[in-house]
Amino acid sequence: MLILGIETSCDETAVAVVGDNGLMLSNTVATQVEVHARYGGIVPEVASRQHVLAMGPVVRKAVADAGVSWADIDAVAVTHGPGLAGSLIVGVNAAKGIAASLGKPLVGVNHLEGHIYGAWVQHPPQPMGAHKATPGASGSARVDFGIEPGFPLMCLIVSGGHTELVLMLGHPDNAAGSANAFSLKGETRDDAAGEAFDKAARVLGLPYPGGPEIQRLAENAPTTERFTRPYVRGSDDFSFSGLKSALIRRAREVGVYPAPEGGVDRQTVAALAKAFQSAVVDVLVRKTLEAAERHDCRGIVVAGGVAANKALRMKFVAESPLPVAVPHPSLCTDNGAMIAMSGMYRFKAGMVSDFSLDVDPGLRIGQ
Ligand code: KG4
Ligand code: ZN
Image 1 (cartoon, rainbow, N blue to C red):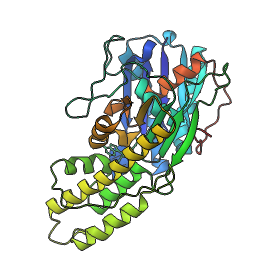
Image 2: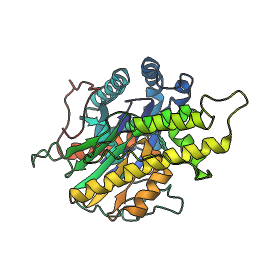
Image 3: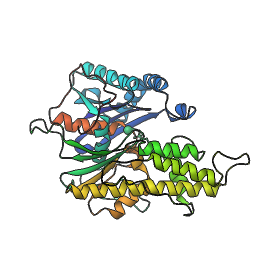
Image 4: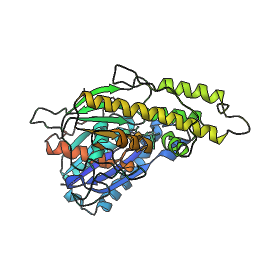
């Protein structure tokens, strides 16, 4: 079985082909990061137009890289929400055009479910059964279950727009009456985790996107700063805006914000980056493990752009008593393979979309 997956919910035009057992045959991503970096964030109208420009070449490359012919594709999966309306429209219309011309089904995918399914994609391509849990010394490699540990799974989705704790009860199965296999348990009350990284980076004078920059600086930083962990006790919800305020306050005190004329002290900035990252990571790991225990989970999935964070991956692997799966770092940020994977499970369950599929910018998960 071959599924073409198309993702355009935000600022990546991404298309992939995924085959049997989740084997990733190609994964093409045209990022717009540099275009938006000029503005310090994503400009929706610019994003839509970049998708229009990139879509044709990216689709063609994904199919060529996979070494398959168009006629071999069994279904076309596409993100239809949540995300930026104008960006989603480009992907959904492209998917409709391709599916119609091939005479194959269209499968609308929830972007957040897609992030979770990134953990089922086999990357790098290798024969089924050859993969094993390989957190790696650096903590940067793919972390997988080896064998799916059964359900329920506690899934933490941490991206630029989302921070959600979702209980996954199984794979979607229309026939079994579990079309909605997800149940939302907690979410952020203010900033998303990735958004918090991006805002913290701006305070520290680092470029967008901030997460990778903070991770890089934190790596060799002194442990001389510390922030109170915002746990939001008694709830599975998150809150990161207080942490951001604490960072701003401290950055002012130590003279790195606003940046002084003569430039900032790099060590001080690095220490703040490290302290900020540690606080976010501690909260995400502890709350996920607590929720997993309360719901008798069999395993944990960590997904979304922030799941690429090395400190977060290492802490989950080190502290979780349950098996943990985190997609390969390149499949944590938006990509077509995760959409193809989610689409494959939906397609197998007979959950195809009709051609009136609309975009749903505010689509939720597990409700
Ligand atoms: O999932 P994603 O690509 O897009 C959304 O759906 O939002 O996530 C992007 C977010 C950005 O906020 C970025 O700063 C964050 O993921 N991010 C990271 C890392 N890599 C990306 N945050 C922390 N550490 C990283 N290594
Ligand atoms: Zn995303």
